[in-house]
Length: 458
Image (cartoon, rainbow, N blue to C red; front, side, top):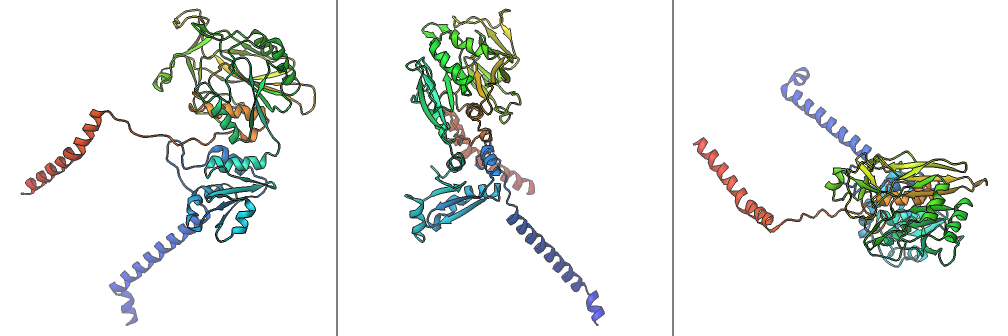
C-alpha cells in the first residue's frame, strides 16, 4: 500500500512542488542575506547624481581612524538622511552612522550645539565638525575640516587687473572661492602692488589673469616666495590688443617664469576642432581632452576642459627646476601671432600647428629639506572665472592644481557635480504637435487598430 502511494501520480507532483518551493525559498533567503551583507547599487544617471563622487570615495576609503556621522532629526524623518549616509557606510567599515532624535535625547543635541533638525555632525581625528548642508558636499566638507588640522590660505594677487574673489559677475572668482571653501581653504586678497611681499600666511598664491604689467618689485616678491619654498599658480592670457580690450605683455613676469623653464609664447590659440563648435564653443576656446600622468590631471581623464583666449607655452628643465607638461591642445589647433585684429586667417602658413602645450607644473629645488617650491602655469587667464569654471572638468582641474600646490594630494579627484537641469524646452509649434498627437493621433491609432482586428476576425 505504501509502495503504491509512493508511486502515485499525485505523490510525485506533490514532491516536485515541495522541492520547487524549497529551492525558491532557499534562493530568496540566500539573496536576502547577500543583499544585507553586500549592499550594492547601480547609478545609471548621466552625471552619477545618486552616487558619491570619486573625491569622497578616495577620502573615506583612505581613513586611518574611525569616523562617526551623527544625524539629528525627528525619528519619523530619519529616512531623509539614511540614503546618503548609508552610501558613506558602504565605502568603509571605519564609518559609523548614528541617528539621534533631539526630542528623545535632548542632552546630546545640546552638547552638539544643534540648532535645527536635519543636521549632521562628523567626528574623526579627535575633532567635530557640523556639516554645512545635508548633501555630499556638506558631509565630505566636514570630514575634510576634521582631517585637515592646519589652516590653509589661498591668496589671490591683486593690483594689476586680476580676477577678484569678491566679484560675482561673469569675470569674477567668487565661484572659485566657494569651491575652495568646500575643501576647507580660506581665500584672501594679497595686494602685491601696495606691498611687494607675499603674506607669510599664504599656502598658495594665485596670479589670476592680470591685464596690466607686474612691476619688478611684485615679480621679485613672487620669486623670493617660490624660491623660498612657496607655491604659486599662474593663469596668464596672451597679450591681446583688440580695440579697447588690451592685455599687457607682462615681460618681467614672463622672464621670471622663463628662468624656471616655462616660456610663454606671444600667440593666440584658435581651436578648429568641430566638437568644440558642437558644444557651443568658438575657435577662441581651446578644447582639451587628453592629459599627462601628472597627479593634477591623472584623475580627470575622459573629461574635457576649455580654455578661452589661451596661449601656448614651451617647457624645459633647469638646474633648479623640474617641469612637467599637464596637457596639450588638440592637433586641429593653431596659434597665430596676430594679436591686434578681430579677424585672423586660420590658414596663414605662419601659424603654429597643434598640438600645443597649454599648461605645466614644476618644482623648485630650494636646497633645503622638506622645503620644495612648486608652481603651475596655464596659458589662459579666464578659464577658472565664474563663466567657465563650471564647464565640464574646469572646476576639478583648478581645484586639483590648488591641492597639488598645497601638498594636499589626497584631495585630488573628481568632485561632486551639481544636478543637471534637464527641462525640455519646446517652441509653440512643437508644443502644439505634442498636444495634437497625444490627444487625437494616439487614440485614433488605437481605434483604427481595433477596428482592423475586428474586421479581420469577422
